[in-house]
Length: 179
Ligand code: NI
Image (cartoon, rainbow, N blue to C red; front, top):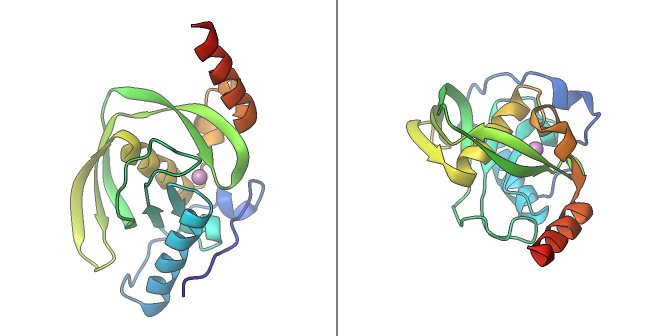
C-alpha cells in the first residue's frame, strides 16, 4: 500500500535547494517513492508534486491531473513520473493562470507560463521521452520544474494577484453576479 508522505511547507530550506539528478530510475526505492508521491498528491487534491516537497532533493516530479475539488476543470491524465527533465524549450507566447501549491497552503496567484513546452525526460522505465505539453499539463510541468530548482510560484506570481483561496472564490462569485 502506498503511504501518504509529509509535504514540506514554505520556509523549509529544502524547497530552496537545487535538486540533484537521479542516477538509477529503476531502483526499487525510487519506484516506491513514485507510488507514494502519486498517492500523496491525489490525497491532497494536487495536480502534481515534486520530490523536494516530500523532502527528497532529487530531479523527479509527478504530473497527475484529474478533476478534484481544488481543480474541478483539470483534464484526466494518468500520472506521469518525470525524471531528469532537460532540453526545455518554451513557446514565446505566455498565458496567465491561477496557481496554488501544496507547500503554500491556501494561497493562490496569477502566474504567466509558456503556452506550450518541448522537453526531454526519462520515464519510469528508464526510457528517454521527447515530447510537447500544452494547457494545464504545460503549466503543471513548469511549476514542478521550478520546484526542483528551488523556486516556488510565489516568485513567479504577480504579487498584486496573491489571494487566499477563500477570497478568490468570493471575488469570482461577486464578479459573476455583477457582469
Ligand atoms: Ni508546488
